[in-house]
Length: 77
Image (cartoon, rainbow, N blue to C red; front, side):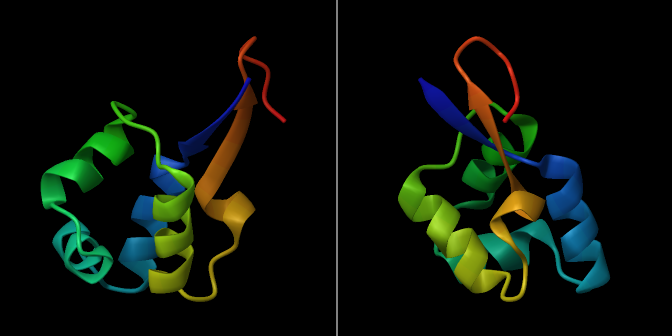
């Protein structure tokens, strides 16, 4: 099984470069700031729809910059 995780450090750097907050991101993605926090801490993994929304809201940011693909055995792809 393949799992996709958010690269939290990269997301926080991107937000800092854009001078935007997690609350701004949550508002633009139409989700709660608590859910953004869960994604950043790794408590939840982003669904395909959520990954698409990240890429739309953070225009110009590539998939590999924001997400990491892991196999169920723990190996990174």
